[in-house]
Amino acid sequence: MAGKVHRLILFGILFLICGQPVTAQATIADSNTTRPVLAHSAGTFDTDRPALQHRNPRYRLCASDVIALTFPLTLEFDQTVSVQPDGFATLAGAGDIHLEGLTEQEAIPAIRTAYAEILHNPIVTIELKDFNKPYFTVSGQVFKPGKFDLRGYTTATEAIAMAGGFEDSAKHSQVLLFRRVKDSWLEVKNLDLKHILQGHSVNEDPQIRPGDMLFVPQNTISKAKKFIPNYGMGAYSEFHP
Figure 1 (cartoon, rainbow, N blue to C red):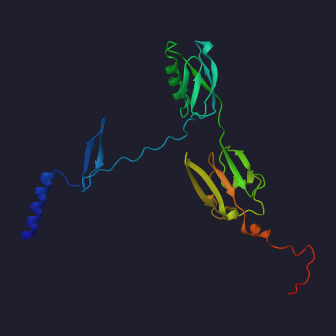
Figure 2: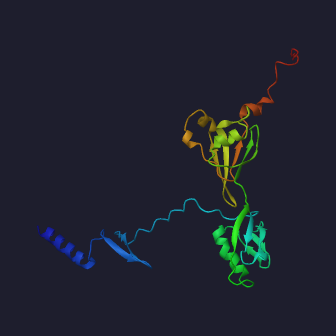
Figure 3: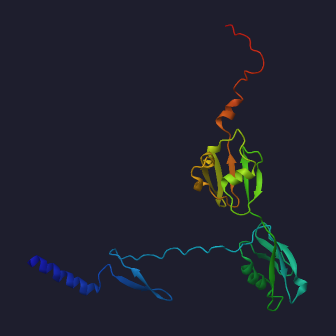
């Protein structure tokens, strides 16, 4: 009984010192607001989860894109320019400006700044005239290998169909999907399209993304076929040791 009383007294002292149980909600202040976080016994706080990415992002300018610039108040500066491989575009009277990676709305203030020295508070509009159309490639054992425009939602099996379908020598179960993750990093995935085309695991038929490449290898039988004699043609004499 005495031990129990001592434990209750100790708990009361700890409560008075801490001011609240260790699992209760506390608050921390950031630059604008005070938000609740859960304090753990280790003395750390839950970090904010990463912000969700914006859906339907706006198109960003790429190399070889062609844009038309219109200056309503100074028509002599109207022009059509191309984004060069290094991401720069040469503007008449304003020199080079880096536009690659910018949306049209982001490019407008950059262009206005470039002309600020020769035009007072310039007004400019941008129209995208030509751009890199999304594409994918299919190579290997298909009837029509090549580069294809990517228009709308397309799966790997649909991409193979657009390339004319599998040849008899194709290895359907080991199709390779190459996808560029970064400039110097390719991701490779093995696809069993034979299994999918048989109606199994159809949800595993991946969506093709811009720049993807599908490679269909040759099956083992067709590789060995050239080493197998054709017994239906020619004459064979009896072998005598």
